[in-house]
Amino acid sequence: MLEGSPPGGFFAPYDNPQLPDGPVGESLTARLGRGTKDFIVANQDTAFFAMLSFYAVHAPLQTTEERFEYYRTKGLEAGLAEHAFTMERRFPIRTVQDNPVYAGMVAELDAAVGNVLDALDSLGLADNTIVVFTSDNGGVASGDAYATRPNRW
Image 1 (cartoon, rainbow, N blue to C red):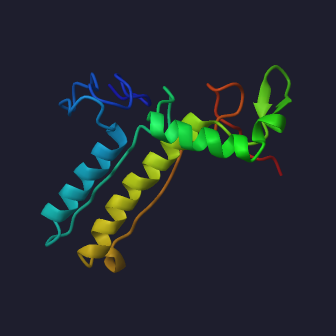
Image 2: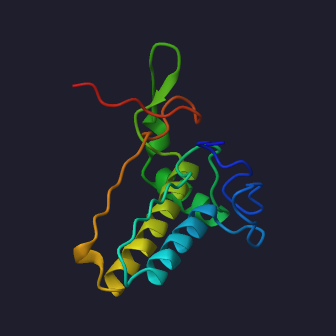
């Protein structure tokens, strides 16, 4: 069964029948990045195809306490909470992306992607490798459970 959200959340235990649990609290996003890096290292001498489909950034929104505090403080210092929402048709929507949990998830995703790209660089494969990024969601908009809609031109 294919799912957009990880069955057990973004930290071990994962409750995922396709992935053995790591140590309690291990980041699923970091784990998937490391697994892809390991695959690249193991197959560096041959042509390979790796498809890394992170669950992040998807519900449930979860991050570490450290990342939450960092982005919460950053948002408060910038005064974002004072003008973060406006009313749309039925929901208040975010006009500023100030959700510290979402920001923590994006930071974790960025670090995992960086780990994979660093592996390509260090192995001398970056110049001969195609990397494609795609996404199915924007940021958090209405409340904290709805993705943003694309900009309208």
